[in-house]
Length: 132
Image (cartoon, rainbow, N blue to C red):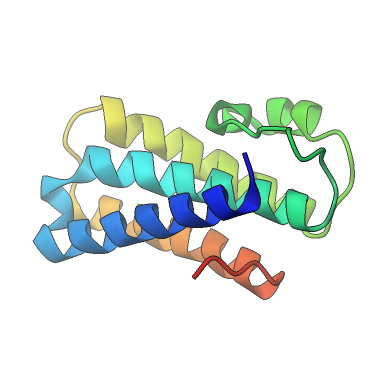
């Protein structure tokens, strides 16, 4: 996927997350789960492309982050903040499945998930990733 497509997808997901917050997070937990995971994965892929760490045609999939071990196997090269990024994305992925496929969660748990996503977004923004 090219960089502009990643940027467009990230902006779409961030916009949808904002809309879900406005409507009430407890009413949109599945949507929040999908879009936080998707946007965080797109941000990582954009980061890796921007730094020429993966081939232009390479794709990073959200399920790479089902565990730290799997993420490290799939991303078997070094990059800045690798351990922090992997830890965040694994946590996002694990909570994604609960939000998307589990029982309704308390509002506070969904808000914690959004905060986790915002933390990952901040890491990528500090690394120079711009998508707007």
